[in-house]
Amino acid sequence: MNKPFKIIKESIAVVLFTAMLFSCTNDSKEVRDFLAEKNLPIGVARDAYHVYKDSGRITSKLITPQLNDFSNRKNHPYNEFPKGVKIINFENDGKDSVTVVGDYALSYAKTSISELKGNVVVINHTDMTKLETDQLFWDQKNKYFFSEKPFILTKLTDSTFTKGIGFESRENLTKWVSKKITGDIITNEDEL
View: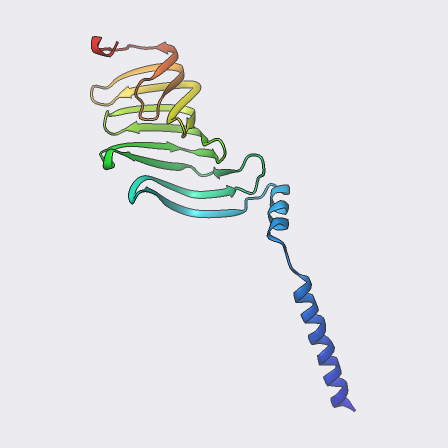
């Protein structure tokens, strides 16, 4: 009498366990919506090193201690770099490069605009030009930088610098415009 009771008890346990497993299905859309509702990233990458290529050539490298992926947002999907980011862009078969560094960054997928905050430094290694500011917006479609914050633009070859508030330029720091300038500006008649 004990043996049949034990078999029935085990059978019921197996049926209930199996029913529990099959009832715990999560639709991936439901999971994404739950994460978006709770303002949680859909993915987190630590010590990320990403290489972008175009036609087999390296066009840029992204290095960050942490990447939070919020691509589950319907209206404005974005990536967050809460512990800083370093981006190196390569042009002309790697001869020209620009390095962008910031303590914090947001990159919006739909608009291709990124915002960098805190100790933002941009260096054009070819022209030896360095931009320093606290906040910088980067329009990646149009290859354009702009900021409304104070900045310092330094020509590393001769240590001349320009200080100002409000800055716009191409992403390689050429053809720049300042809204308010303080400091010395050295120009060449050919550039005017």
